[in-house]
Image (cartoon, rainbow, N blue to C red):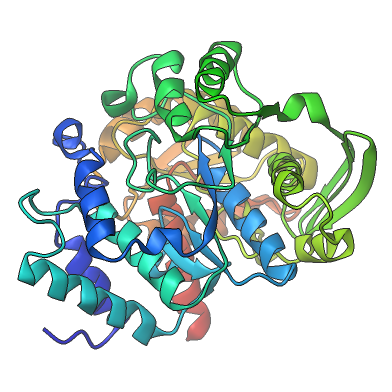
Length: 441
């Protein structure tokens, strides 16, 4: 089968078991034996580059993008593997945030298909999952394109994630929350055990702020692996944060050094992610050129994380889908825009939409419940039923129509009150795609 575009290539990959759609078979499908076989059959592409490996519940995608951007500015060709995507699968496999040419995705997917059709890729271990194939595709592309570094974000957990066959230079564990409880476990300790599974023998691990019960599990794993553990809270202090719609600035005190950081990223949580990325890279490149590092931070390519589009009204697109991240988003929005505005909210099944709405509803003048557009199951009527008791919620299932309604309501409020779209990456992606298409007309 000839693949004429990257969309055709990714459509083929998505035709396999996609555990992002449903976790029903996750307990039996998540294992590393088949991924290890696939990597060996493909000539071990994961050994062709140095890597940074990231797990966690919040901030891992941002931290990955920031780390890759710094490595790029330092002169290293750097692959970046993240998930999920907002608009196109190409977002998951990039050159530090920049798409490869279409033929790169097509050519390497055709190789995967040929290997699968011949029976060489998986032997008797059965069909791979979509995420396993995406991981393999990323590794093949990074090898083919001569990447010296790759920054790799786990898909869900860590211990049994298909990325967990790399031997990184450093591991990162970002803040851990209750998430994917039907797969990872129903306590912070169980989830931390899965995330800590990326820690490798003797490889330094940098850990962002954690609940004490999670930190205890991570420390125990690091001790077992004899891995040096750096807890960011012990090494980093952030002072004089300032935020605006065009970016942020802050002073970073890292051990005995102090830097004034200016970045295009908005949100106080991004200050923490930047600080973590710098602490990580100082472990593997203690003499890196800080002038280049500071230049890199002025222009980081990152979509769907407190991304502000337009000014009349400002539209904030954010993929937050946990109470913790919603709280951080609200803090930043209030600092930049003040109180009020219009909320567009959607949530997929398995997420605690009640906890998110309990935080969000009091902070907005109007609330519009919409339906995330993607392959995960949703129950928009249940979400709306919970929100309508507030007396200020409306239901508009179409994300496109929900945005238009929100913009008109924001205009009535005046004073440049924002429209904030959040609750799901899939809702954020649908709205971002609609805005892009509308702007092209």
